Length: 442
Image (cartoon, rainbow, N blue to C red; front, side, top):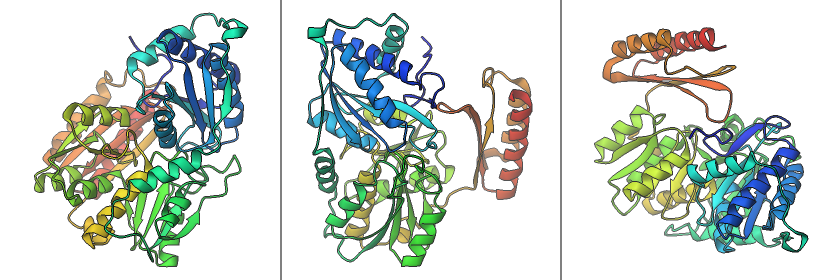
């Protein structure tokens, strides 16, 4: 069956639109709670990022779960991967995160985790959707759920993150810039790195409910680059609003995205790595550089859930999306920006090499991504004019380039990606294809 409400990463929309309104979120909580109840489950853990609407949706979700007879553990502002981790340590049956990740403050969304700290399955999402479309029925008063706040959640997660660092020495004397995007890592990440010995310079640690991801964080790296160079730091780390993505900047101010971080993880760890997983968006340069080291890159559809599925199916450890979702399954169960950054620092400390040196052999192909705002992406794969043009350009570039056109799973966009060895050609092809998409679908 086709999912009606869930996208590639839960449910997301502009606040007040679709399911992202208090009455609908309350019913979503009830529907999820009813599915849990039918499975013999009784407890859910809820965290959120720092956007202003989180308070409203936290209350609505809490009411919905209680109406279904589910007990609620409230975490307050907490990174998405922290909710995944704490769901396991508290033996909760599910974890919920109220967040729109890297989106602006006026968007919000809901992410779901199972008791094992992994994204819930497509089958469970469909089951929730089916119950959501039935009439809400409150359990008898004596069966209503109860709610309580977890006061020591931040400290527990900080200690977990620190435990994943396995460098030969502490980070004493290393100057690191952290950009927390005014998001959910603002009160977590600085403590983690400081307690491991680093000298930390912080930006994006003053959330006001409206400034999340605004001109900072993993989707806006200019400020981080400037700050790294200004303070002569060895590197900079940027998280997105909910902390499941990470980007890094080296001491020269160059950006390392998820592809570059995956390359370092795959080639710098002491235990041999035979294969990793990326997505159809992973750069051709990454694939070629890994191949030169005897490492296979498995490609999946876009979405960290699909990278996760590939890793589990092939018994692999490392996977990533270029956008900064980095999976280290020997350390945790989901994409975790803080944990991933600590694994890169482990590689630095154990090798004695800088980020610049660790990524030296990785030569990325020029890649252009254009996002086209559309009313609907329906018929994208069947559009003959677009398919013919794509085939023409693919033949022109041969083995030295790739084209990918896909609908976004979280926003009303069609994404046009072109990469190849010729930067000017890549830009021209991307521009022409984006204009064609706009004329066909806008």
